[in-house]
Image 1 (cartoon, one colour):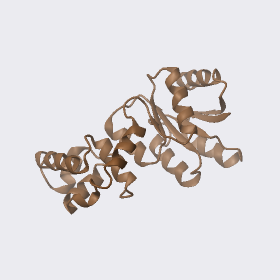
Image 2 (cartoon, one colour):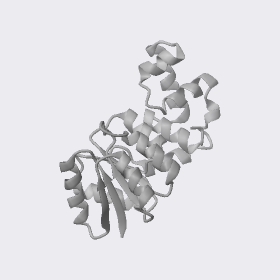
Image 3 (cartoon, rainbow, N blue to C red):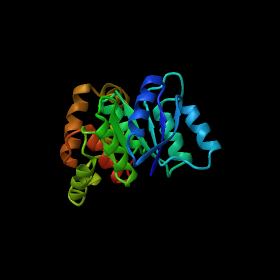
Length: 213
């Protein structure tokens, strides 16, 4: 039985997801909370922790899902995290991955995918919806590890690659590096070519796998 704690600041969403998970015999919802603070309080009080916390990323009336993930990974590293949100942009995926979140599902996902995500994460693997095949990406990156290494990057490119793993926009990165957006785009292309990846998310995953960030 997989024990799951839910956190979402929308009561209807919280109730709906809870009902969906309750219909799966492998999953047991042990607590529903509406704020990140309530999650942390629950973990402090109850010795039996959930196996997985399914949480919303944007919670304006509390600490954000990003901050919640940071605190949980620091204090309760054995608990696995799945973000369930309507935000599908690349920067969100990168930040969630970098913070050690094991899974991501869209709120528009079918209930069957939600179940698959929980079972996958509970088994020790990562699941990032249908947007990114993390398992195959990891295998592909590992395959190129010997020939496509961080040492192929110049120091300038490495600095930019590290910034690409943050939630900064490309414009913010360009401003920080004091270069034009066009120059940054050219450097981004070179980074992707040298690491043999295609997207910013893949750059972030590669640097994380190599222990650079």
